[in-house]
Length: 270
Image (cartoon, rainbow, N blue to C red; front, side, top):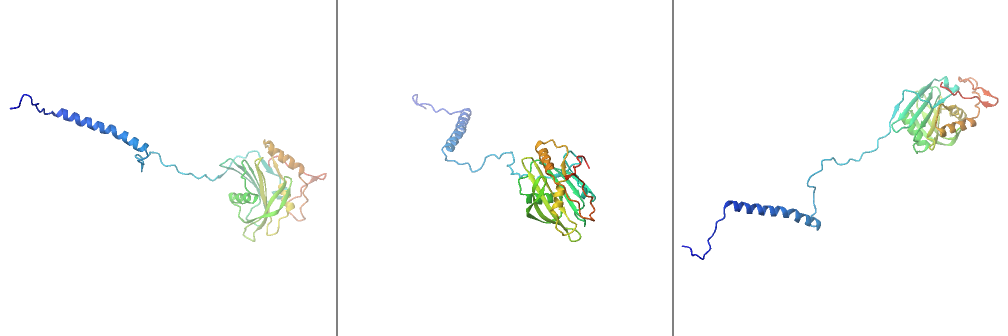
């Protein structure tokens, strides 16, 4: 028998026990983020790895693409070469455009690989690369596939209507003994134009600088709207000197002179 003053022991039901367990679990879950936040803020915990990797791929360092050349089918107004001394060898014109916007016109007379003479003029328009004349010539030969076996800078400039041009001695390998050539280059970065080319003999004989100068002087502009480029060619035409007649027995016909002045260039398409 229990005494009247003794308190009775009450047995809790299952619902009360479940409620207490749920309350304890909620308190624990609520305290964990707070404790973790204070630990990181105090510098006690340093995450060793990311909890969840990002879905985006890691950045990859991309290398700049090398500009590439493509051939342009339609001819646009630009430049031409009126070279009677070289026309009998046959003239070929190539128009190209580089992926960065640089345009190129190539005027080639004769074949580089046969036993005859050979010459070419290359005119670039656009953002001219800031390189030395020798480096520019070497890159140009590689782009055009010119079989130049050696390219050596020559300290003597070439006198032309455009002013002095940097020169280089070069050779082209042929089936016979090879051709001796004189390359030249002029770069006007502010006007965005570069004029380069080469003149080759049929054999290993040295190229006449006078003949190379006369060849460069036969370049003229056609329909160029750029004022800087037009001014360069207008000034050059005023400075052009008459070329002497070729030696006896030479195939090209002489260029007629008028009153001691050079014959006017043909300002139309050949």
